[in-house]
Image (tube, one colour):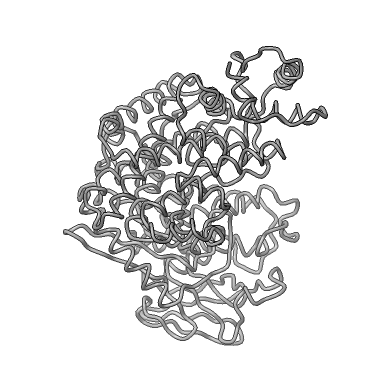
Length: 625
């Protein structure tokens, strides 16, 4: 197998710009070699497992893939490099290595028996052989009356009910025979034979091909699969096909074309580099306006999952985001940026939960790319409202990413290369911090950043019990005290972390859709229905009506000191009011911004001792004295 090296001059280029096509080929080749290693691990593990299966031995499937490699190497590589083959390899290895008995019932949550999951390799071989035009025959899994042919499509037994309408999902695994001759492929379910169309990309009765989208803008082409059929298209393991309707497919095709147009306009060479990696996207259900969900996996290099976006610019930013993740995931397969076993959990302003160092490194690289996109796109936005939203995204992610880079400097778990990497990202971002933005945009971004950071502290940091006890006793006694200067609080991930961007979503409404936001202010129940976690006080806060919102949050914090959201809301009100230095409000603002979790813990301890709950502003100011 080829030995893969990571030239430092190319690594330098991808920490200071988006376009580095030569570097992409190195990563693509390395990831393909890693994929072959994963397949070898599956083969070896299956061979060592006493697997009771109605399928042929895995070596028969592998031999068919070898035939494809000999006859049509480009087909073999395209099929084996398909992102979801990596997700399958991870999933089946976990089951093979974790099952008590290989031929026993599937573990809780498994959709199919183990043999059917291993049989994805047989289906992969059939798909490759069909595309290579070979004569072949191989038995593959048929789950709920359907055969998945990865990279090709889905064959369904006529009359079979989709898995979503089947009550006993674990009992629906059978087999089918796939036979191929030059110009002809058919699937024999036993009770019916389904011939596939000569042109495998054509749709036919009982046959749904994978949908491909190819768009060209300014001579730069993007070719991606919109994957709604492959059983391993999601990160959690096997799932059933969920074919998009014709209208949904057309909508995604148009969104991708428009997003690609934006990316090429921003930087054609960077877009060309992205096209070398991005190969598949799995649509997710629509999430919420101004809050698109997306994800990717190092196992599925070159793919991403995304909920339906609000507009092409949002999708373009997500494509950049997940492209960055794919790049850095491949780099981290070749180079060590952090010490093994570095398990300390850290703050990441793009996640609601604490993250390990590897996740934070991924985040700063991904959001450096997001910041890059919004910085350029804000000058090309078509309308004033689109420009305001782009400016907000640029301001928010510029602040969040540069702040996180600064927090990682000197981290003892970084390797020398990791420290160099973080420094290079900081140098890439640095010139952008001097670029001016309208003050209302800076204010809104600052409020959104404060919401996330303070909310994260309230949910995931636990002050030392002895410190809280000492401060509560001092409050009871009426003596002076101040926030502890020594020893950071423990990171203790909450079991039910709240969403920490509710007000940020409302601010986006205010900037980009003022008419709807005005309706929210007039009728708060509309905001409650439209924005997850929102209530009337949040709408007042996002509208800048801090006095009204403060009264609500103060009353809540006093009535129920344990309520985290009340403390978060109060902190944001004081942040927004920006009280004059030397006042009680200014002192309380400082204490809550720096140590909201300590103020809340002391208030709880005072109330738990049977004393009247303290005024939250006076308590915070006292702690800051």
